[in-house]
Length: 121
View 1 (cartoon, rainbow, N blue to C red):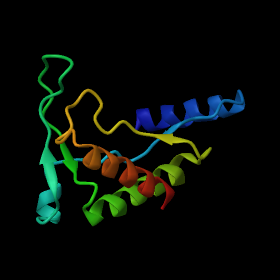
View 2: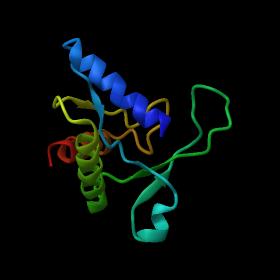
View 3: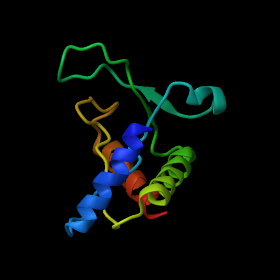
View 4: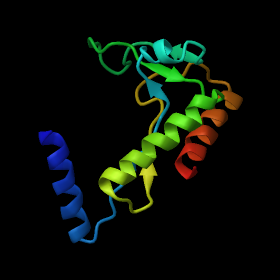
C-alpha cells in the first residue's frame, strides 16, 4: 500500500512539473498459475534472468497469438489508466534481459503487434 501511495505522489508531482509520465503496458509475462484458470493458455517458460546470476524464478510468457493476450493486455491497461489516469504514452519491454522463446522475425513481429493491439484496445 505504501508503494501505491508513493506512485500517486510521483505521478502528481511529475504532472505538476509539466512532465509526461509513461505508464506500463502488458508485456505478456504471466504467472505459472494462469494455467489453473486457463489450462489451454499457450504459455512458454522463459529461462532465468540472463544478465545476472541470480535466484529470480523463471518467468512465463503468454503467446501473442493466444486470444487471452489481447484480453489480459487490454484489461491490464484499463486498470492502470483507471488507477493513475493517462497521458496516453505507454511502454513495455517484453523480453527485458530475457531470451525470447523464438528469434524468428514472424514471432517477434507478432509479439509487437499483440502488445500494440492490447494498448490500443
